[in-house]
View (tube, helix red, strand yellow):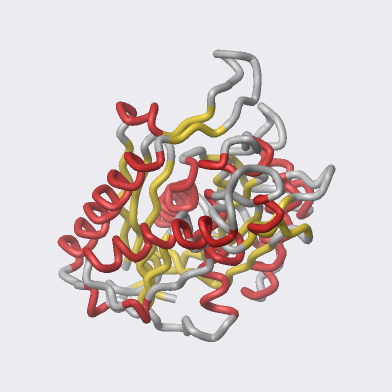
Length: 323
């Protein structure tokens, strides 16, 4: 008998303020047509003044707990993926812990940019399997618009704010190996950091900095690296794209989504796409897309889900789980 973690519920939160492509067009030299053609994005959400990443994460966490029917008193682990923490320290996860009224267990952040949720999921899953904890909140939350250069049309059109969460719970399991959270493949390549980064930091400039990106090179590496992570999942499990019920990718760019799905032989109708509604929300995009798939009734209990992401650093990965 071995311990295995299962996803009990999902949740999401998007700030009230919406910034459309037309709004962006009034700020930089671009257009709704240009943005949609190259990215698939129609709008993005922006955190209100005074609205913190921890506020967004807490709202998403409460939504997931409600869906799971699990009280916060049962949660003994929070792993929060974010690139935009409330403060340098303490970890934003500890602010979420306090706002939820969770008085025990552990809470910490992970930072893998757009791949963050998958890194957080793999971390929490590993800890639950080892018996260190029993019930985890895995959260991705960002106020990414606060690190954008609004004069740079190559980046400011791409990102938005939001949060998503999943409740994981461990149980002893003797059934099918393709149940619950099944496997992960996560990797990084620091030699590519100069292609997608923020030009500031505590020990370098002492400033927050802004997002900088070489878009064309990032696109090429994204398709290659993501595909390799998915292939590693296929090789480990013996599955193919035909076996997957739903593909829930990081919502970065519609062209990347299409390119990866085509290369990995995943049918278009299996791809969950939400990027048009909230743009790239970095670590929040996978849990937001997963929550949409569940709440819309498309993804149902028992469905096999494949997720992937790539972010600055470079970081990338893929995870396989059954609802």
